[in-house]
Length: 326
Image (cartoon, rainbow, N blue to C red; front, side, top):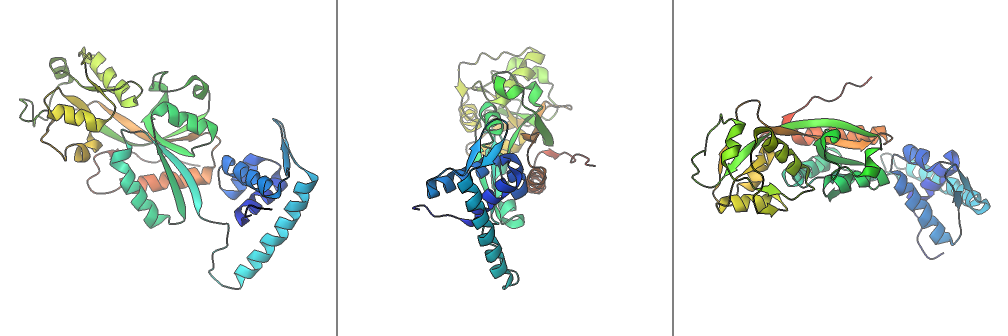
């Protein structure tokens, strides 16, 4: 046996032996289903033999797998008895909690640092892996089990088919709105509209607007605003990020609609002007999306972490109340 065997892997095998279900084993251990599969795969590689057989209907342990599972039970019991001799000691294999969070690029630069700081302070045993990508790829990650949750623009039903892949559209998702924010008009320095705070959206007909590339949900949202007021959207320049758009605006190549939470970051470099629309201003809703069959306890704790990170001075979004739970 060349590879090292860990207690976490042995716990996964025992949970699988008890439930004969990768999903139920994951729920018991409060980890993701792919993590259980990876643990069993690592054990099989270490022992050089199959521990379980899998098909679409059921899971069965092999004779060798049942033997290893019984040995794993004894090892885990002995370790826990040893740990009990030292009050307050952390049991090996029971931490850290690992979660994989997806965030769209028009949100990540503006809230990720507070999320990570809040996690370190309030949930130190959490190992949080973050993936920044567009909506379509993050939904695919939720479908495949590669992600536990994603921060996306809501509602998903309003996204274009390019942003919601066909194979993801039929998946049951749970959407939890977290905050709303207005779009502001980002303008070149000393623009005549600079500092205005009561603009009608019809003013967009008079301004060349810079947009993100297709595939960004924000691009689709801005296009919707433009269509509603009859504004042109044929600017020759398209950008891959809001940072690039802000630089193009500073160079006098046009204007853009920017989520208000992005202002502190995107206006740090170079002189830029800002104008705001009269109420109700165009804007967007950002929330947490999980699979409908996701582990409830982990989802709720991630939601609490995200809400705590948003509840800070200077946050420009309007935090929405949490869902009522029975």
